[in-house]
Image (tube, rainbow, N blue to C red; front, side):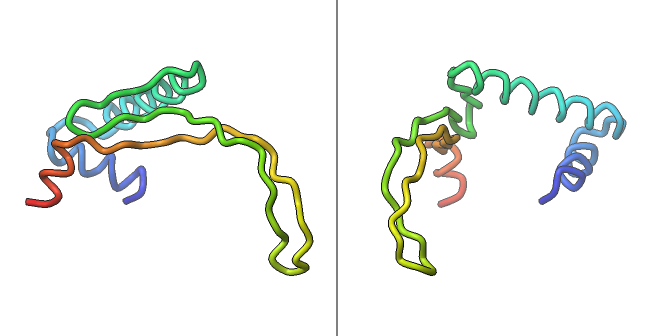
Length: 91
């Protein structure tokens, strides 16, 4: 589902104007990104939790040449689905 399709689905479900929904989706995205950048978890009750995890530097291989390469440390988003969401999907 694309962002536009998501917005259209919200418009259909909530019965509100499309421009308002797009602004809300952009605002929610902005808040989530800002919180994750600050190192805080974002919990969406009934959906799950987003957080940032540190990935340590490690050694890898170039698949074409087999040469060893160093992969730099980085940060990555992590999502953990809530029990409620898992239960709904497995019902």
